[in-house]
Amino acid sequence: MSDQGDLQIRVLLLETDEDVIEPLSLYFGGRGAEVMVASDVANGLALAVRSRPDVILLASQLADVDGLEVYRRLHNAPLTAHIPIMFIVSHRDASRQNQLLAAGADDVILRPFDVEILALRVRNAVQRTRREGLTDTRTGLPTGPMIIEKIAELNRSGNYTRLELSVAHFDAFRTRYNFISGNDVLRFTANTICEVVGELADDDFVGQREDAQFVVLTAPERSQTVKDQLTARLNEGLLQFYTFMERDQGFVQIEDGRGGLVDRPLMHLEIEEAVARR
Image (cartoon, rainbow, N blue to C red):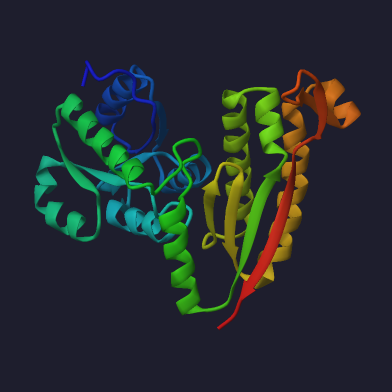
């Protein structure tokens, strides 16, 4: 993979063996990937929710916890169910390949492995997810197909509340600054939504419809708390993307297309709520 350029992906390595952690961290990190390492289940699950990696490399055994149990917890949690998970298995446990693949793992890598071949398989798994339009490349959140699937599942199973979130005046901000700054706003918004939802429950779903439009599927009894916390944290946090002068005056100025300037309000969160009942 040495001739394939930078790997602009986020990799979560859930592993305890330094003989695996060190070479993979050096290899992926040296090619532009963001590598996160967790050696215990609690930190691994928290990192997966908070950082939404593009792929998770999971040891088949973590201390006293079977990797398959960790996989099931990740796969069954709405905030991490969409992330490709690849097992790293010792050659002594090669017989587990069928069991892990049958459980739904995206791939199984036997140790000792060729790091370049492993990296190619990681890249292919990420590209397959992106090609199928399952996640947004900027935020890592599930997109259209997975949102539709989750809503259909909830429609069959019971009551829930759908919160449609949008960052108002995001386009004006992106015009005033640039697309890179706009992407920073999207990542910040996605991170904040996932943090708030993750702190309140482990069975709520977060997705991204397009650009600055997001959706949260939560229990009716939690919806008001989710709304209140998201509104408070995002409205405060979004102000940090403006200069002091812009925050003080309460607007930005952008070109109007006729050689002049026009005032546009600062970004803030808007939420629409819909309750679905069986």
